[in-house]
Length: 64
Image (cartoon, rainbow, N blue to C red):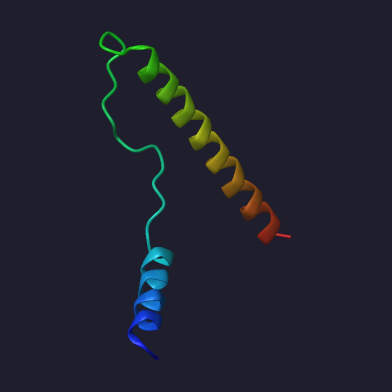
């Protein structure tokens, strides 16, 4: 294997071993938030909900 192939394989392996973050502990101050912060918070909440739904669906399918 050449160096590029080895590095690509190593990078792929590292990506597969990354933890999945759920509900990261990030401080949010509504008093200091601007409209972009509020939008970002809404997007993050929606993404968390989609991730949870996907995990539940995968779990239900594997239990069949």
